[in-house]
Length: 231
Image (cartoon, rainbow, N blue to C red):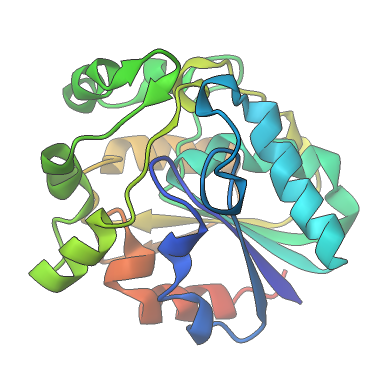
């Protein structure tokens, strides 16, 4: 078994740094196009299909065939595309406070109205850029100052496509076990929206007492939840 970790919007593979050493199996943290090892890619050109292709490429390059696929936040719109592309390699899917809007809609159509206005203001020229003050409030509400500084130091710009392209959820029709991890103190993706996404995903539901960036604020408890997945 191995873990493949897909980050959400505004981050790269480095957001998993605290979690990876706590996992019981090999872990591959993927950089989606436009950040980290793929920072040479122009974010303005990145599509949802490009994101899925990056995950598939890394999984195949590493020769992984017994994968627990973990998607955080906006990775919820990438995960089903990966499930369709390489179903034979995936043993279980875990979605951590993942954004999963109804099939064919956009992420922008489904996020909380109180957050949507700030997000729409952050979209310009194909780029999604989160301000530090907004990110502190939405992502770091359960962190101390040191953890907050560490998290915000990893914040990067992202592709607007994650929010503005229609999503394809057909991968969730695959017969692959899945778990949705709800984060009870999440100020970014509200409890109501997490419940709606969990219903669309199906499978088991686990709740952790955490804000949105559980891999940074409670990596030990998130690792425990992931290590208990056997698929």
